[in-house]
Each structure stands twice: as C-alpha cells, then as structure tokens.
Image 1 (cartoon, rainbow, N blue to C red):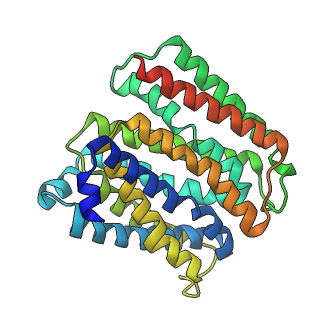
Image 2: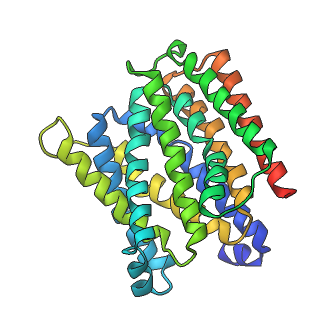
Image 3: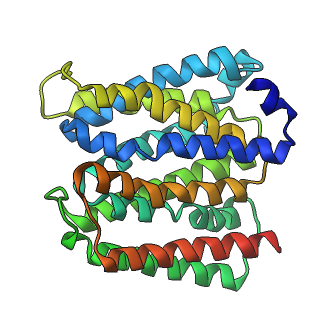
Length: 296
C-alpha cells in the first residue's frame, strides 16, 4: 500500500490524502448524535481525546524538528491559532447540539469564502468583485437553510439561528487559522491544534453543568476522539503539501453532502426540500469561487 502511495504523482497523493481525510470525517456528526452526551461533556471528551491522539500521531509520524515546531506555537501567531482552534472545537460542538446537522455543515462549508476575505486583510491579496458577490450569495444560501431549519425532522430542541451562528463562527475560525498558516509558513499547526484541543476540553469539563467528568462516555465519543477527529485532521493538513489548497477545499465539500446523509440514515434526521435548495446554493457558490480563483 505504501509502495503504491509513493508511486503516485504529488498531486494525486494530495487528492488521495484529502479524500481519505474527508471520508473519515463525514460520520463525525452521526457519532456526536449517537453519544447523547451533555454538550459540554461532549466538547470535553472530544477535545482531550483528540489532543492526546493527534499529539501521538505528530510525535510518531509527522514531526521534522520537534523543538523548533513547539517553539513556533508560543509566538503571537501560534497563540492566535491555538485560541482560534479552541473556539472552533467549542463552536462546532455547540452548533451540532443546538440544531440540524445540515444547518451547521452548510454554514461550515463557507470556510473557503471567509478565507478569501481574510486573505485580503492578512495577506494583502486582491479579490475580484465577483468573489465578493459569490460570498454574499453563499450567505443568502445559509440564510435559506437556517430559515427553514426548524422544519427538519428529528432535530434537537434548540435555536436554529444560534446553531447557524456557531457554524459560521467555526468556518470563520478555521479560515483565520489556515490564513495565518499561509502567512507564517514556519508555524506548526498540528502541535498548536493539539494544545488547543486539550485547552478546549479542559475548559469544557470545568464549565459543564454536570459535576466533574462523565466517565460513562459511550464508545461513539471514543471513536470520535481517537480515530475520526485526529486522523482526519492530520490527513487534511498533510494534503495541501502535495496538491492545491483549492483542491482540498473542493474535496472537503463532501462533508457537507455526506454528513447529513449519514445522520439521515442513522437516526432519521431529515432536512426539508428548502434546506436542500439552500445548501445547493452554497455548494454552487463555493464551486464557482474555486473555479474563478484558479483563473486569477
């Protein structure tokens, strides 16, 4: 298997890594639903288990200069990335606990568009007028999904607006992280993510309304924390080293499509036709943006 991987051209390696990462990631929200844990306990277990597992993966397979990489995360950019990733972990889990999976994943899918906006301010890159128009169209698509989110079947009894907001904040946070990683290429994102995950997990356990740590966490949480989250994230971070970031963003859209399908099959959480239409608008907008970005 490794010989086959090594025989591939770099671009194909990147595509394969990104595809594997996304396919591992797509059932994540289904396992979150199946766990039935209190939301802050969920954040805690996901954060702690992912942080420890991802650190082991980095230490065993991905490190090049451990001392240099660890020093890079105690700089101002490194601290900003850790804060951003900690909030991402919290926001995504709270969003899933609040409302329909399709609402959260559709909002999250706007990440490449937020990255384009942030690149204007942080990287001094120019964006065409069409790019700004596409961002507006995508936000309208998210609005359509959110507006009809309460009509989806078998969803949590929460606020669809708040859930959509958490999804957008996660997208913005990820875009901020990846834009900083582009600006400061020496920044070691994986160890920063390890620390951020552990911090978010510890904070969540502390503020959880349930006293202490719920050690009755089901197997679904363990699967998320030690397999789905760390391995998918590691693969998705390696992929851009071999192929274009736009290609990775394109492949990541599979999560927006397959995530709701897994939940639909697994627990009967079905979106409405209007929500599917809004998601199609977002998906089309991102595909259009990726296409025009290649021509710039």
